[in-house]
Image 1 (spheres, one colour):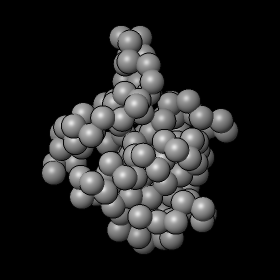
Image 2 (tube, helix red, strand yellow):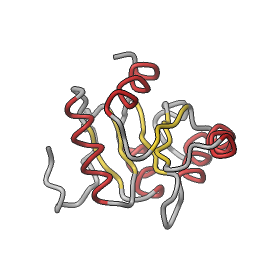
Image 3 (cartoon, one colour):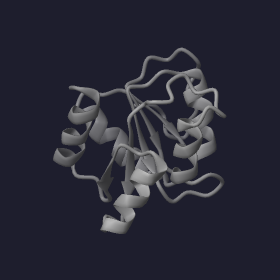
Image 4 (cartoon, helix red, strand yellow):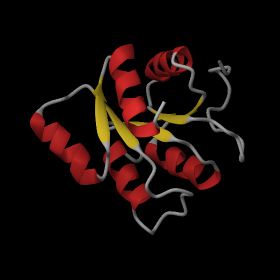
Length: 138
């Protein structure tokens, strides 16, 4: 696992599987550990703006996107990733929302923003595994 006290931005051309986007350090650490347990490598971003910047430089298989963040929330970041306005390498990358709210309205809001799926917080290993297999294929 990478040093969580260092800058969370990755270097260009890294070959990581998943980008974790969450403003909460504990949530990032938990997600990293679960992903590593499942055999995925990952990078982290602390907000939606940093996520878009990383997606302009790096290819990933999926994004785990917190929906509530300062600067640029997960909904707006997803809309930007999906639009032609951004220079992300893959506008169709699977984006899985990380949300503490899993009501029907919240699910609809995730879908409307362009997210492919969602997982609840706190993260559960089996649910995360199921979503990644569905969208990444392993």
